Amino acid sequence: MSDSDWRQLIVRLMNFIGGQWCEPIEGRYDLDYNPATFEVYAEVPDSSEQDLDLALNAARNAFKTWRLVPAPARGEMLFRVAHMLEERKEDLAKKMCLDMGKVLVEARGDVQEGIDMAYYMAGEGRRTFGQTTPSELLSKFAMALRDPIGVAAIITPWNFPMAIPTWKIFPALVTGNTVVFKPDSKAPVLAYELVKILQEAGFPKGTVNLVFGQGKTVGEAMLADPRVDLISFTGSTQTGRHIAAKAGEQLKRVSLELGGKNAIIVLNDANLDLAVDGIVWSAFGTTGQRCTACSRIIVQEGIHDELKERLLDRMKTLKLGEGRNESVDVGPLVSQEALNKVERYVAIGRGEGARLEIGGERWNQGADSPGWYYLPTLFTDVNPSMRIAQEEIFGPVLSMIKVKDLDEAVRINNQVTYGLSSSLFRKIPPRKRGMADLTQARA
Image (cartoon, rainbow, N blue to C red):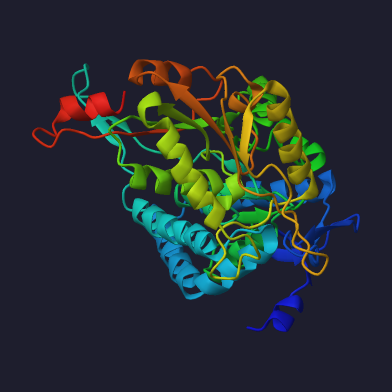
């Protein structure tokens, strides 16, 4: 498909409620921009509580019958979804590049996670096992069955617009729950495409409902409405705290996946080629816009300088640009707001006394090719207490912290308020790769 053909794809999206595509009741729309070009890519419903009310009614009504459908039959529908995702993988990946700026190789991986989840959860339709236990009473039989919970409110971010919704929606559906799905309006097109596929796969009316809108309206109403039985949210820690508090007032079940300030520890005996590959992919893949992105390198002093030089050499080769270009390594940030946040934190790092080794500014590519781009950035001489080493930046900014040994590295790794992911590069003696060695390697 040519560039001119892609520019024709500006569409007015709609909500999907009770098996029908419909415009927002109050007729308001927001604009979705291609972050690499600033071109308008889609018009997105700015829904109201009235739209959500219709969706919750549809989900609650559908739950009455959907919960009675045998789980293997629900799984068969997800097998159909998996096949359709496979057939449309390349098209969906290219739309993702336009929608939120991810480079093509990562967008393909994002869609592939949706495919994998569809197959995985389809199989779970035949594994929703209960449990039997010996009874302590004579002539009594004790058995537990798995029952669906009800209506699941699914609130997802923009950075993995296919993978994260499928992680949440597919398990909910295969276990007999119905769904009201509110994606982030910064990446709405993949949500729209996913729900179209679920409709085509035969999910009954009301089992899946899509409502675009703002967190302060649609999101807040989801938290307060008693028709919502559980909430699954991925996003900022601040918002997650708010959701947990509000949902707790009604004893709603809550699943939260929040922020991170993740570290990669590199010890003196590490394979540095492998370490550099892992650091660059983790820190600058998705332009650093992952909750699991590496934003700290905790490196043993014996190889600090060599690792720094290798990283600088690799970072100089990273190519920035529009995501559908196969040669591009790093795409744009998702929005002007995201770009401004990265700039603020780089200024904070400089003000705190960290040494800026590379990057630290917008990528100036000329007026003919705009975009919310920021150069991959590396700070050294970073103290673990600095804000750039403590707070989530959500951009292509990496802090390098020097330590004496593994004990100090682990201590510094744990000196943040987050607890999402971390990695360790070191050699494990080949003589005995037993549990003792692996446990030590994961320390």
